[in-house]
Every structure is written in C-alpha cells, then in structure tokens.
Image 1 (spheres, rainbow, N blue to C red):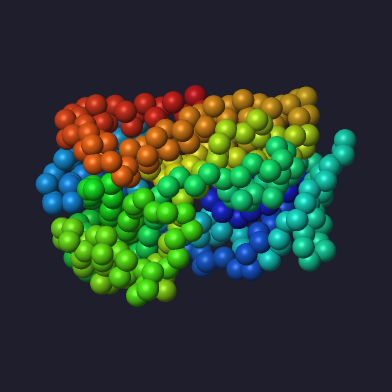
Image 2: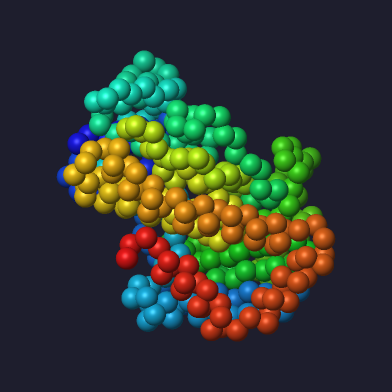
Length: 360
C-alpha cells in the first residue's frame, strides 16, 4: 500500500514514521520550502507544576512526576519545534518533498492523486491530509468548513535559562482572565507562553509585541518581567487561536484527515500535538489490520479517533472561555476551584484523560 501524506507537522511526520514501520510505502509533501534543523534533545523530566495567581500566591502544586509510577512513563517537556526536528531526523529529511503547495485531490476506485501548484502530482492508495487548520484537503471531504476563532491569542517563545526557571518544574500564573506558562526545556532554555482574550485580527500595536506584553503582564511576579526583557522580538510568535467544529466525517473514499485538519483545538489542555500523534498511530494500525480494503481501514480509524478528539476540542474551548473570560466573576470562580481542588483530584483527572486514550 502506498500512502501520500500532505503536511509535515507533528501529526504528518508521526504518520510517516509509523506507516513506514508498518511496511507501507510513504511519500510526504510539505508546502514550506524548508524545515528546521534536526537532532534536538528531549531534555529533563518534569516533576512538579506550580500554579500561582498574578500576585505570586500559590493556588496548587501538582507532582506530575508521579505519573511515571501511575502510568509507567515519565513526563518530558519538549518544544513543538524540537519535537518536529526529532521527527524529521527519524523520517529522514531526504524523504520529504518541500515547497509542495497542495491545490486539490482527485480519486477513483483504485487510487487518489494530489495536485500541487507547481505542476507536480503524487498518486497512491491513500491520501492523508495533515495540512493543518486551514486544510485544502478537508474541502474534498466535507466542503467548506471554516475554522472558528477561539477568542484568545498566544505569544510564545524561548529564552536562555540563566536562572529564570528551576529545572524539572513548570509554573503557571493566572489572573484577570490572562495566563502565563513557563517550562524549562533542553539546552538550558525556558519555553514561555502568554495568553489572553484578544479581538480577532488585532494588528501589531505601535511599539511592537514586547511593549504589548509589558502592558498586559509587566506587573506580574518574577521571573515574568525578566522574560519580557530577554526574548528576541523577531523570534516571538503571535498566534490567534482557532479550532474546528465537529466535522460530519473525516474520510471519503481513499482520502482522510489527521491532526489539526480534522480537529484543531485551543491549547488550554495541551493536547493538540498529542491528539495528532494518536491519530497517526491509530491510522497505521487501522490500515494495517483491515482485510477489507482502504475504505474499511479508514472507517476503523475514524471510529477509534473521532469521538475522543472532538471531546477534547469541546473541553479545550470551554476551558478557554472560562480562563480568559472578560467577566471577573467567571475567572474568579475558576481560580477558587483550582485552589480548592486537591492534588488527588487533579492527578486523577489527568490520569483519566490519558487512560481514556485509544490504545487499549
């Protein structure tokens, strides 16, 4: 079986790797002309996450290192860029076709063909649309389904960890409908993410994004003011967050969707990349286990993944609406709930999310 994958993000690269290991022939195409360097490391284990108010008062502490004892695997923080680089390294950069902008897909009873803007084509038994929230291939399956603005924006980046953040520990700060998350990652670096409600299409303000963040978060507790002075503004990423409503289906004939193309989600549960990787693994298993052809394999894949992924999209959106609400009564109730929840309850909720996965 030959599988054509369109898109080389985390989900698409994972699909390439697991499908090839399952014995399938794989071709992968990516619209970007280049990808980042390969060979990044995972970094240190995460042992604790501390949630605080914007005034530095501790709301709760979660010993996430206990997940290794509970579930048999440790927790490692890794940036999306590093993870993508590791996957490129595993797949092999020479096995990726870059600068390939998909414009349409056609299929018949025996094959499916992807057409690219530069005149190239790729034909296989299955086409996988891993081409993101603004997927071209999604239109082939369900027509024009527009992403929904989630009402929030993210500013994300990485700075050197020159004493800013203790190793093995993550910090989350909440206040006034805003959030800041900090994690130490490989290479003595700190990953940071700022989130708050923003009007859709907000232009870059006069003075730039750093000044914007200073106005929003400049009076928050250390090390946040130091973070705001250390990042390179050219490397700061500003993202307006979109998700997708539930789709009528993920597959049609020999064409299917994976990752954000099928179930883009707000980042409030930290599950976007995770769910794309679950998709990839179950897609390879479903195609490899069927004896009834491609359509049956894709139906098996969708049956195992669609409900869980769409549940996480809905839960992530609800959490975003509460966490970044304009009404102080709403987010004040959230902070009170975080403060009153026990470590046992928090760990149990996270464990149930992981154990409810599709790999049993």
